[in-house]
Image (cartoon, rainbow over all chains, first blue to last red; front, side, top):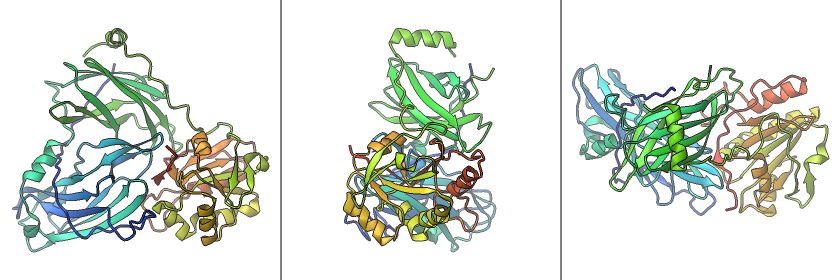
Length: 283
Length: 198
C-alpha cells in the first residue's frame, strides 16, 4: 500500500469587485467587444521592508454563466495564467489556486475552473526596502467559456501603495486554498489499488465520518492522460476511479500525480492536497 | 491506515460496486479508424472508405473557437494540408458544433479559401465515435486504416511561442510517409470544448 500527501502552501479568497481593463476576443453570440471577465491587481499591504512579505493577487470578476479555468482545465479549455512583473528585490512564490469547481463543458467533456469572482494570489518576498513608487505588474490571460469561448488578456500594473486594500479578500483566498495534510492528525487515509502499469487506479479514501460530497481534481501533467471515471461515496468511504495513460512517447512517465480532494458539507467546502503514487502496481 | 484487504472488504460491505468505465469512448492510437459517412458543406457525401489506402488527417474545427480562429488566421491547417496534399495526404475538417449547419461551414470554407472539405456533424455522432474533445483536435489515419496520431496541432496552446513551435501533425506525417513509427503519437489536445448536441 502506498499513499502520500503533500503540503501545498497557499490561500484563497472570493472578493466581489469590478474592474475595467480586461480584454476580450469576439464571439459569435452577440458579445463582440464585450469583455466577459474583468481583472484587477490587488495587494494586502501598502509597503514591505527588507526580509518582509506581502501578498499580491489578481481578482477575476466573471460574468454570470461564464467560467474561467483552473490550472488543469479538464478535457478542454486553457489554464488561467498570471505572470508577475516585479521590481528587483521582490520575488513571487507559487501561485495559489483556490479550490476549483467541476462542470460539464460539453457532452462528456469535464471542466475545472471558476465562476463568479475568484482571486489568484502569491506570497511576495522582499529582499530590499520597497520603493513603493515602483510599479508592480502582472500579465494575465484567460479563456472564458459559456456556450462559446472568448480569449482574454490584460496587462495590470500599479504602485504598491495604490493596490492595497482590505485584507478580508486575502483571508478568504487563504481559507479556500487546498490544505496540506497534518501527518499527526490526517483528515482521511488513502489506499491505492492499480496504477500506471494497469492503466487504471482506484483511490479508497476513508474518512472519520460521512464526509458530504467528495470531488477529486487531478493536476495537469504533460506526460499523462488522466480521466476521472467516477467518484462515489458511501458512508465514510469514497472510491475514486481513474484511468491513467502515458502519452507524448514518454516511456517511463511521471511516478506521481498531484491532485486535490474536496469535500462539501452543509457548513463549508474544504480541500486537501493529495499526492498519488502512480507506480503502486509496480512489483 | 487500513490495509487494502480491509478497505476492499469494507467497500463490499458498503455496497460500492464497480464503476462503469467511460474509457471505451473514442479511439486510441493503434485502433482501427471507425468508418463514417458525412455530408460536406456543399452537400456532397464523403466517406472515410473513399480514401482507402491513403493517409488521412481528421481535423475537428469550430469557426467560433478563438483557437481555431488563431490557427486559420496564421494558415496553420491550410498550409499543412497544401504541403502534404502532393504527397497523397487527404485532409478532412469535421465540424461537430451542434449549431453549425452546412451554410455556416460553407461560409467559413469560402472565407478561408480552403481546398479541403468541411464535413457537417451536427449530431456529434462522428465526434463521439472518435472521442474528439477540443477544437482543434487532430487524428492521423495511416494507409492501413489505423489511428497513428491523436492530439494537438502543436505545442503552443497560448500561441505565445516564437519560432520554436513543434508541429506534432507535421512531424507525425513525415514519419508515417517515411514508413516509420510515430514517435509522439498522442498529445493532450487544447482548445475550446467541442460544442456537442445535448
